[in-house]
Length: 496
Image 1 (cartoon, rainbow, N blue to C red):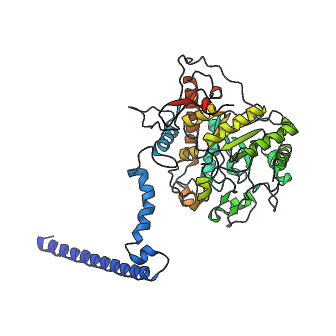
Image 2 (image 1 turned 45 degrees about the vertical axis):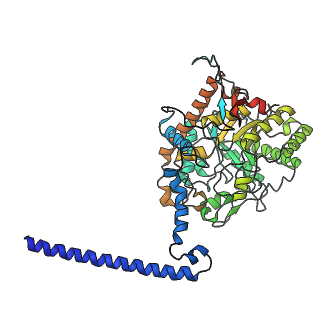
Image 3 (image 1 turned 90 degrees about the vertical axis):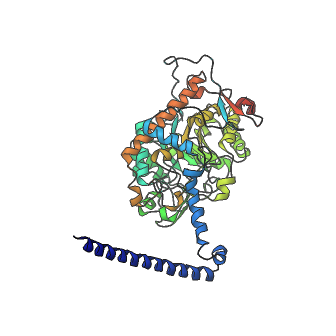
């Protein structure tokens, strides 16, 4: 090809590009005119009406800003509800196990921060005395002896995707911890890993319900007889993200399969009542607990977010009146700042005591009533790091459960799309295209690594404090920073 021919072809190409450019500019101008006309004639959005076309960018920037802050603008420990340092730590240990960090801490010891009191003469490796196994429900036909003090909190099939539940089930088996089914019933994916299960019965009684949302005794009996993996039953009274309101599963997430498992109508939002219809007072609640325990032949307890302490005191008074056998075998305490896939903002932000207040308060009440050895306490609510779990043991917990910690282990990036069925990591969506990114075999190993690391590092804190086991930690072992910068033992803030 000679120079003249090359020049001719080049000029032809430039002419085509020029024509395309003019066409694109023309189309953009047409779109701008259309948007301008639409904006100045609509009456729903004042910003767009007063600033046509340009006003559209406000919503775009506001939406994108929520996510850009994760990467560019927020410091490591500034984000809510979980900061980058917490998310990165969970991601790293889930992939590689326990790890070390360089240079120094970036944590700010502001008022309320917990500091653990290391012992002067901690025991060396091999000198720690193993604790006796903890038995829940000694008086039941099938008492439960958990293998792990850190476990997977309630997450239903419906709020989470099929591959997410599969990964949790397989990971729980690898880790030796229990998996709470959440209130959506027992799905095949909860069972397939072979792990210990805590079957949660929410106020909607999904999976074991009559049409009027009362308990179907036959379904519960059959379910427990056919599935020995179910080791405990948890009656959910309330959860920290929406105390006083039942569970909410948006219609977009109620597939045919989920509807069949729950015993509800597909494509229609699953809204649970705000309490169990059989339990309008403490006496009826104890009757329901006894009924479920008798039918299931399993240890049976309750889950609640604490508001006022009076109802807890009333429950204790009724237990003492009836006798120790009437007590729940365990109480799961959820913090008022707990998480969920869908909750109204007023309840999410402003309802219920945090775990920092409710856990030691309930522990104190049970100790004073002489019920503490009878009733196990399980702590839940944003306890995703070893320090937070260790604090819970100091405050009185026998076990700690986490939901969102394990969601991060599955690959959650806190995209805040749980309620929209568009989770980009496949954790909380039923869109099969998005679910492809979540491989259960790979993620189950990360679930195991996170659980094992949490147990190892909570034990490390306990050993540094000079005790043999996390359950040996007391309120003297953790110091709480005060507004003046000084710290005092938790025992001075909360006394029995």
